[in-house]
Image (tube, rainbow, N blue to C red):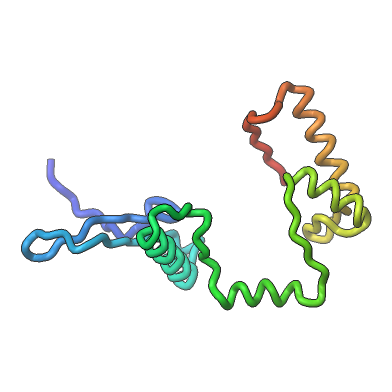
Amino acid sequence: LSAVDADVSLAKFDLQVTVSEQFDEQGSSVGMGVALTYATDLFDEATMIGFAERFQQVLVAGSNDPDTSVGDIDIVTAQERESVLALGRGREVSLVDGVVPDLLTAQAERTPEAAAVSVEGDELTYAEFADRVGRLARYLISTGVGPEVRVAVAMD
């Protein structure tokens, strides 16, 4: 039996985040180091740099205010926010509260013939999509699925 040095730069998962404590020459802790190892056929360097920057934002915000909920930490850059806002300029935009099925029903009532889903030339209107969602919901209810029951749905 003998030790074999493994190439630790190989990704064992699609994305691996390794956090390890760092020490100086005297053995005193000098902080934490983070290494991102990723499958290059799925991610590119620019994506990982963006991921690292956002991860750093979350860590800084969390350490500055430990009572902050992670979900309340803003990770959208100013440029991204401007790009998204530019898409909506000149359009009526309204923010609504509600659960997804209720929002879908409301949208189907407002614009039944508008495209809701479009994939490779096939299109479903909001009315058709809402009908399919309703049929799936009724089927799930008939099998005993109710509130707080987890369901996995696989669709093409």
